[in-house]
Image (cartoon, rainbow, N blue to C red; front, side, top):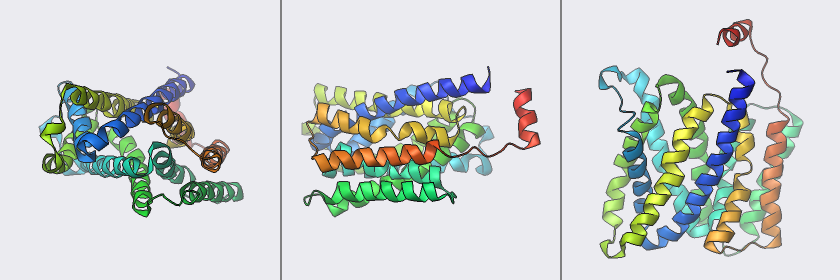
Length: 294
């Protein structure tokens, strides 16, 4: 398969994951007031492990420390990213929380850039986030901080997933990360769980969140990041805040002022412009030879 075709398939899969994740996040917005963020995150990880582990069980004999540590760190990152993001959604709403969280992949895309255009786009994106968060005097500072924590964790997730996808066959790496994440989140879930809030409707909702937000997109991410560079991943992800705002309005009944709508669009346009206009690093002779062989 040609490199261009591989990238096209990876890009298409990334669009599908954006829709899946944001729809799942909107469902999580319904579940969090009922059972709490730790329970929702634990349910996500349980579903992911139940789907992946039977087919992609890691071979323990091959798990030397030098090979396994990125998967372990990915598990920690998943726990931090999901807990902080869902708490931000609970406090700020999905549209606002998703826009703040998007600063993570934007930072990855602009890392090390020295172009004036990138500086201007970064400032525009930052201004958009400030406009979004401070145009509503009722927004919580704690919620904003949690959104920024989720953004930093998402940046780490992108880098670690690419590393894990190269170091482990299939989905073994993400299976390890899922187990680690569940081990971190489960104690908090058990402490905060109110059994009286559980019924078959809530359990079904949690299962759907797990499939849409974890098992399906995280499985695809290792496939995607083997085929497209982080820059292209970030370009497609730049549409995420708009998709999140759409699901926030449709599923959660969120409403946005005109200023907030403009702010979300500014962030997406600034990010897309900065990322799309970047130049690819010229390949070395060794890399060109490797591409020809594969």
